[in-house]
Figure (tube, rainbow, N blue to C red):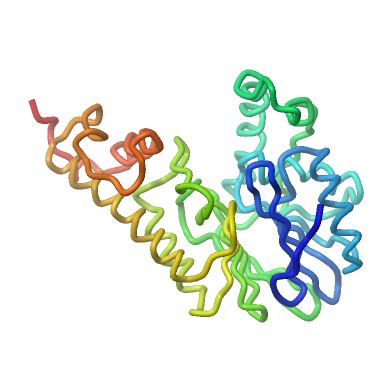
Amino acid sequence: MEFREIADRVWVHRAAWFDLNIVAIGGRDGVVVVDPHGSTAAGRQVRDAIAALGAGPVRAVINTHEHFDHTFGNAAFREADPDVPLHAHEVAAERTRDVGERVQRAYAEEHPDDERTPEVLATEIVPADHTFSSVRVLDLGDRALELVHPGRGHTAGDLVVRIGDADVLLAGDLVEESAPPALGADSHPMDWPLSLDTVLSLTTPATVVVPGHGALVDRAFVEEQRNLLGIVAETIRDLAGRGVPLDQALEVGEWPYPREVLADAVARGYADLPRAQKRLPLV
């Protein structure tokens, strides 16, 4: 496992499993780890690779949201230091255990041939214990990390990490490069574009953006993804406003992403719209 330095003391490992980006941020006082992988065993590999950087002790771990590929590595860092702070948005921390347990129940059935299945099932789920609602700043001695909840999007508990002195933004799964944005049953498609507006306000034209999955991107990529998600949201609003029934919306709408990845998003969008923006279904 190798970490590549993308800016001053900001290292990224792009893991093959889930194409996940794991980030280490160094400062005078030590290292902060962001999204430490999808099992305790994988988290131990992350821990050892970060130790090999020689950048100092791990001072904190951050989860950008509650999904298991971003949180199941927490236990590996607690093994090494029972007092290491684990940071997340309050909603993400609250949901980490339930989400993780559902994944463990389903993983063997959904991934019967995955060599990682035993380690996913063996992982102890350790939710974050340092939470916030809006903004938190972590002090690494000679640099500050801004943790910001820009609003609901991929989940209700997304956070981004701004490293201002390096002009780097860690976007979590609010931004994805290697696949369409994950609009799952726990996503909020009507809010996501507005949340990305807040993310964009934290960037400059030169900002390096680290997505949750895939290659590094820039502000222009985030703007494009925001606009496509905006089309999803406005299409849902238009269809519901015209009285198109939910079970017909996918076929009737013109979508910027494949229909097969949008079923949950459309159902969630219809559910989240206020009654005033919906008409009775067309007969």
